[in-house]
Image (tube, rainbow, N blue to C red; front, side, top):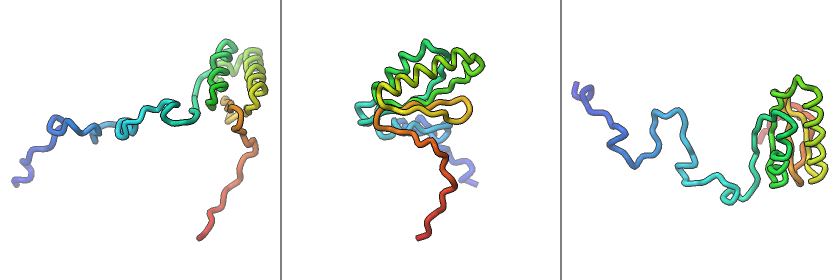
Length: 132
């Protein structure tokens, strides 16, 4: 019965351990010491945002001009036809200006890409696995 009375390891006994098993997530950036900034990754980011109106288009367009890919949720303005049309028209102008691409994704989402990244608007059919 000695194994029942054995003292369990605690976090204080292993202070050098940055990964605690009791956490709901593990920050992989901490494990590798990696800062997820564009200078370290060497490429663009995929950015997610809620778009609440036409006034946000200049800020969002700057992100696309910097080479980032945007996934925009327009649920907040989905019921305002005029605001939605005005916002999408302006985003289309930005995309046309930089030779990017824009497409609807799902019911209330848009994807905006910079130059060099196109969006294939055809839905892929079931992909068969190759047998080796």
